[in-house]
Length: 171
Ligand SMILES: CC(C)(COP(=O)(O)OP(=O)(O)OC[C@H]1O[C@@H](n2cnc3c(N)ncnc32)[C@H](O)[C@@H]1OP(=O)(O)O)[C@@H](O)C(=O)NCCC(=O)NCCS
Image (tube, rainbow, N blue to C red; front, side, top):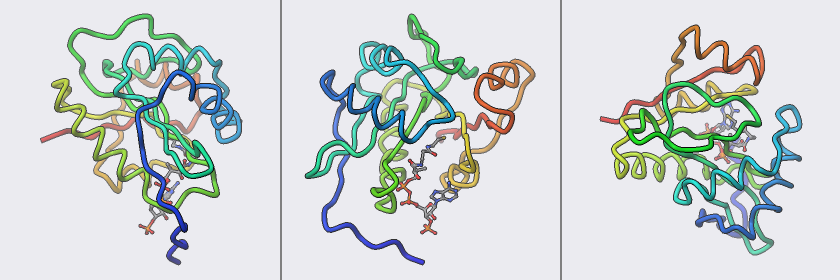
């Protein structure tokens, strides 16, 4: 069934430091199974502002996405990065979360297009992410495929037994 088109059109815009409390409130609501401290978004925004976006609507911020240059190993859940690699092996999508009532407007698709352009700008050869819940099928729509090594499996243990590290190679 096609979801109803909202009467407004949410748009991604750059995240600002003053958005962070709202972003963390959305994270607490959407990701109850994967709690992270407020330091996580704040640090990534400070380290790599172009990777941090919020979905805005007339009623305020209704979603967010956080991405940063990284290697081919997912950071542990709720961890600080400290510094970014000089040469990124990937642009890593740490998280995207939309409030349930705002899904269906294909914000995820718009974000993936944005991240592909951003990855090319920073000479990262691929996008990567850790798919949780039932989202591997969602990410495979865009061409993401699972990527497994023993070291990745060890890192993923901090997420969940079914978390899947996925990559999208950029041509
Ligand atoms: C995943 C998420 C960002 C996608 O939101 P969205 O951009 O609004 O996606 P849409 O609702 O427009 O869906 C687009 C299509 O993907 C499908 N889809 C959405 N979520 C899906 C999922 N979890 N698994 C499989 N398909 C999914 C939709 O059915 C729709 O299919 P259609 O083209 O056949 O109509 C959003 O559902 C969300 O924030 N979920 C909770 C947090 C989360 O899971 N984040 C990702 C963690 S890795």
